[in-house]
Each structure stands twice: as C-alpha cells, then as structure tokens.
Length: 470
Image (cartoon, rainbow, N blue to C red; front, side):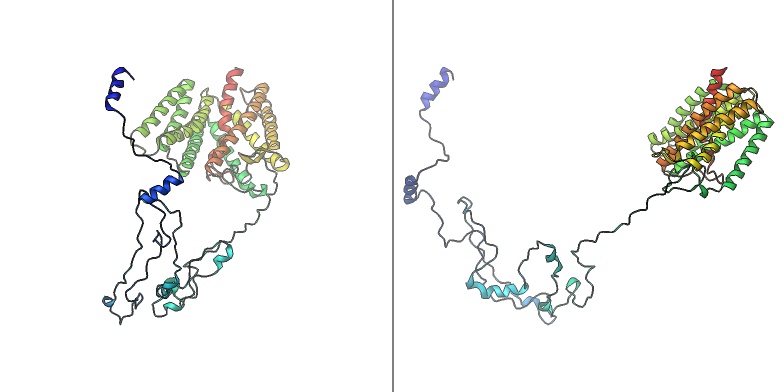
C-alpha cells in the first residue's frame, strides 16, 4: 500500500461492519429473544411441512368412476381441499421428517371415505415369496364397474398380462466328445478340408470311386493336351486357372464382399497369356496395370462398394490364383511341356500319398486351428511320396526330358515343402470365410481351386528351382 492509499484510508474513517454470521452465546441469545431480535423455536402445535391437511368440509363424493349410466356427472361437486400453511423460506429448517400418511384419530371418519378407493396400504416386497401373491384378486369393490385387463375376474389365464417369475434356466445337454478320426492331408469328404465345416468327417464319407474316376479323367485330358504341344497345354492351363479364379471371386462375393470379378478374371487371363508370350518381363507390367486399374475401378462408380476391403479382395484373388498360376505359362514358354508336367506329377504324388497315409496312420494334428483334419503323419507320407515318385517317374523311368535324377529329386523336395503350404493357406481362407469347398464342379473333389491349391504354390517353387539348377 503506497502513501496515497494510506491517506485515503485516514480520510474515510472507520468502516461500517458488514452483515455476516456471528456465533453468540446462551446469555446473548436469551437477550436477543427477549428483545425480539431473533426467532424462537416454533411451538409444537404450529403447522409443519408435510402435515396432513384438514379434512374436507364439503359433501363426501357420492359416486366413483366409471359412473353408471343413470348418474349425471355434471351434478357432482368437487370437494374442497385445504393445504397446510408452509413456513417461510427464510425460517430455519426443523430437521423433522414430514409425515406421509395421516394418523389423526379425529379425521378417521373422513379418511374412511377416501380410503374406499383402495383397500390395501402400500406393501414392500423384499423376498422371492412376496412376489408369489397376486395383487389384483380383490375386486369386490369394483363389482358395479366394467372390469377389463388384469381386473377381469372371468379371465382364466393372466400370464400374458403380468408375471414376476424368474425364467427357468434352460438345461443344455453336454455335447458328446468328438470321436478321434485318422485323416490325412486332405478332407475325406471332398477336395477342400473342413473349411467352414463344424463336424469331423469319416474317411469312408468320401465317394472314392467317383473321386478316382474324376481324377483319372482329368489326368487323361491333361496328358492329351500335353501330348499335342505347348499351345494346347497353355489353353488347358489357362482354362483351369480361370475357373479357379471364378470360384475364388464367387466365394468372396457370397461372403459379403464385392470384388471386381470381371476385372480380376480379365487380369488372370491376361497374365497367363503374357507370361507365355513375353516371359518374366511381362509380369511386372501386368501387375502394375492390374493394381492401378483396380483402384480406378472403385474410384469411378463402376462398382459401388467399400473401396478398401473390396480392392484388397480383388487383388487377393488375382495374386493368389492369377499371378501364381501364371508360372505355368512361364514353364511352358520354353516350348517344353515337360517343365510343367514335372511339378504337376510331384504335386499329385504328394496329395495322394498324404491322403492315404494320413487316413490310415494319422494321429497328431498338423494345424488344429486352421485344418483339424490334417495330420503330421499325412504330411510325412505326402512328402515321401512326392520325393520318391517324382524321382522315379520324372528322373528315371521313363525320364521326362530335360529332367534327370538329381533335378527330379530336388523337385520332389521343393514340392514337398511348397504343396502343404498352399493347402494350409487355402484352408485358412476357407475357415475364415466359413465354407467347406471352393466349388462343386468336380464330384468327389470339390472345386477346381480345391484341386490346384497346392499346385499354385508348387509352380513358382519349381520355376525358380529350374533357374537355380541351370
């Protein structure tokens, strides 16, 4: 505070004490009460907040609702109601609980008239047994009225109106433990594994005669095309890969996605032909064009759907089936069908060996979370069959040129590693989507994609194996 402020304080003089709260003693309080400067305690007979109002002085109500047809409602007079005097808001609180129900004996006669509207006092429910007593059975006072709803005593069933019973818990029988079944690499019921299936299929459930007949027929068609030369073999390979792509996009569409099916199928055919005619240099070009075109497909209103998930679905089908399948065109590009025939024989040997060994000796599951029907024993049987049969047929007797014994052996090893990976990856997608087979075009096998899932992974492995060996 500076000198000017001190001078102002001396000029003003002492300040008037401000209004506030001050605690006083008993003697000072008694003096304030006698002088009338303070309010004393309210007398006991003074009205308090929550008191029952005085009884009405007018006539009692002569009728109840609903009125009979013979009574004129205009003749009824509204009974006067008196409210108790409430204390002023500035008065101190009494700290007493207001009375809710009146208990004055002097007004019992008047209260009986009002109590005719209800025959029971409020009842609090605390236990389960309190809920068993019905509340609407005493309707004798309403005999002159029309009873509807829960008050209709002629009703024999009231459960649809009100109920307080707890629902009985549903007893669920324990599911029987699944029987252990020896299965192999393939699902016995078809070309696909369990995928979306929720049960365990027995080996005998597969129609083996039909499956064998279809397999032999496909083999004959493939041998004829391969015998005619690289171009018929390319046409057959392109048709097979295109059908597999159609199945892949159809499965995604049935799962709720909307991939660009037309674009994906066109890209699959294009990359197959480009790989055969222009070799490896065409693959980056087709991949780049396909990626850009897919984004533009969803950028313009060609396909009105969620862009992110459906672009991913379109590229998934194209890369999985079209790009991996295009290595068949690369193997045929050297104008030698033997380069493609070798991995096909190795993959078929793996599939057959894994199925029969696993179905007879399978005990330990290979990947229960992905495909419970595949076993380690089936994997080992398929690997041995792939190596042995490929070495014998491709490398020794009758020896398919330009394969020799050493190259055929390493081809069997590479396919034994790549084929089960392709099989498991397809099982993963089918389980995620919730289906069993990719299609039904091949009786006893499922779809085309179910037959070539392992081959799609084996083709790139075989191609780069040849690049390394050469």
